[in-house]
Amino acid sequence: MKNIYEELQAKILIVEDDDETLVMLQHMLENKNYTLVSSGSEHSIESACTEQPDVILMNLKLKNTTGLFLLKEIKSIPDLQRTPVIMVSEINTPLYWEEAFKRGAAAYLVNPVHLDYLVKRIDKMLKRRQQEITYGSEV
Image (cartoon, rainbow, N blue to C red; front, top):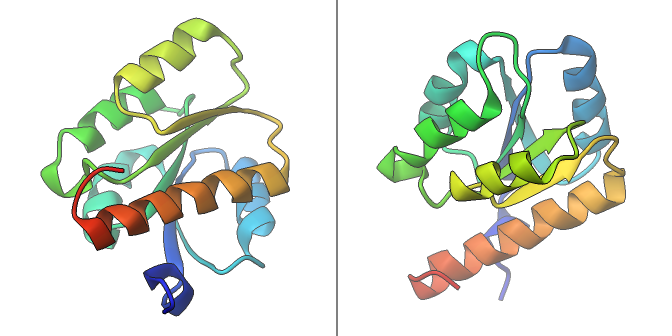
């Protein structure tokens, strides 16, 4: 029996204000079996609600806000509470990791992130989400 992510392409929302970083992430992930959707910080909540992504990949440092603020907002929306959010940042400080996890982040990755590691983390989140859908509870 195929799982839902083998039958359908998983949708990943990338929240990134820096065009160069966004293009790099898109190039890193474009040859994987994902549907990529991108958003700047101003429209990230709207995009998350509209797109209903399977995983959100979000930068900690954004132009007009922070990923921590957006994470808190996303996790306050019932339809998005179980959507895994991977925070990505060049800031390698336990204070930020702890705050991200307190606000509901599923992972905190420090740049530069190696493609294979990023894909493994995304796939792990997708499998866990599939189990939640299949068994109807948190695994």
